[in-house]
Length: 368
Image (cartoon, rainbow, N blue to C red; front, side, top):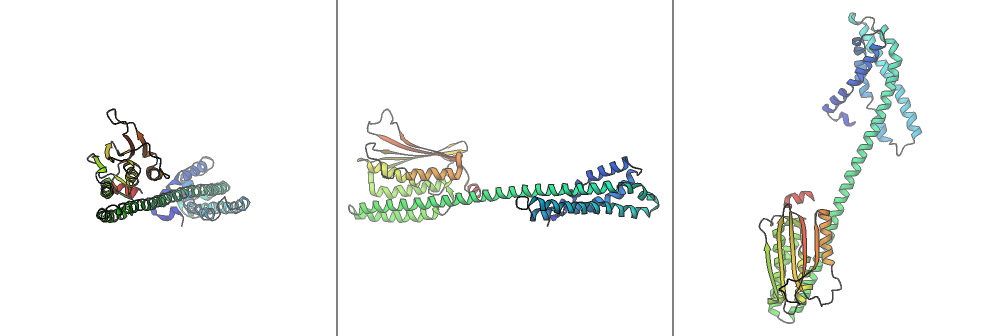
């Protein structure tokens, strides 16, 4: 079905669009002939009304034979013959209207006055049909462009979701292997603490696996998950691992991708605290800045320790997830920072700062 025939409102607007064409034909006919404008309008109005629907017929041919696929010569012959037939139909409809009006006393003589204009009306019918063909091809090209944009946007969305899912699947085994390695190392030293760590790990995995299936979660839940992980590691490190928090109120509801902070706290323990003989502190800080939220993970580390063989994998995952989700609206900074003036010379800090829009979980879910 033609899109204009889908609703009465569209049909009405389409017929109204023919009013200027009818007015132009009436003016030319009355200005260059013996007929009055009333006679011209009476004959041309029904012809234009009928021909308005005839000019919708090219839509089906244009849709079946797009210019990019069909030979131009074949289309020219097809539409040329159709335009000639349309011109004859338009002139014939006007002549029939004149013949019917001639039977009335008020319009006697109309046929003699308007018959000389039949050739001009025939030509106008041909031009109107060809104009309709061009407009239909333009309309179909615009529709194809919009459909291509829609499909491209849908493909980008699906690709983004697939990439996020792949990144999550890469992060989860990475974390699990690290925890099992920690339990294995602790089991040879203190069986009771190893059992406690297994219990804490089971609780952590129960929470993390449930959250990992969600696209976005409130920042408060993500922080709770980070605390649960650090509690698991505190069983292993004891007093060597100290955690401080600076969480600004009003940030817990901001939506973040699930398990976003997990690789950051993992790195802080594995590549930071684990390399310090006396242990160190991990600082979690969250602050609002207008419509954005800044998340900081800071830890001490030994700068003289050799760099791990796979250094930066977790940071790359986090950076990529921010880019896929928010693009240029989110950013990440990571690297060692200069120690405070009153700090010990051997005390070095590594800081990761995430800045991202603060969205509600509901809005973020519908956005994704």
